[in-house]
Length: 111
Length: 119
Image (cartoon, rainbow over the protein chains, first blue to last red):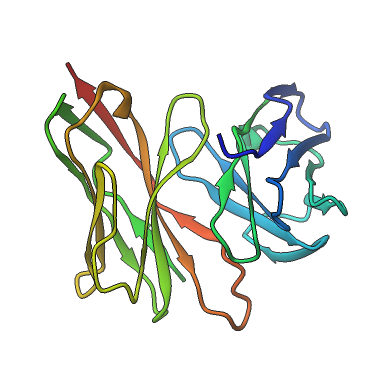
């Protein structure tokens, strides 16, 4: 196990709602990256947080936002959920630009 | 932009046999890192092996080895002595390791290959 935890494990939301996913990073890691993995696809980079600031973003709309806290844990927030947001959301923690260690993921279903 | 291509949607191998999973990549960067991850049905991405673009020798980690051919831009994963527990999705990924600009260590993944190990 990597020491990276995510909550909740599974989540079902309705289109238009908002959702918050959480990630606790491995001890000693100050960077958290978030990825979206649609069914049958490879993960796609959403954004990365380093020392509480966004440090790079993939091709995702502004309704995908995040936070990193002083203890380096992180949240991913998605507003105005769409059906296509249904996916496995993975977070990975690392020392800055170091090896990324993934959590077990949160499976989000939007109906 | 970086791109990873895995052309094998699915592969089958007999237990105890070796199998090669293909990965080709495209990048204009001189310095980069290549990774292989295993993803069981539970969803967690498990790191298997890493190859740096300047590493002269192919990486090995136990039963995993990476056949790195820089001129061909390929980074194939070789699993020796396959086990039933190796059945999973396998992803090849690339990371920019340049220190400057907007490099922030994001991983670019391929589409994955589903490996099934038969007893």
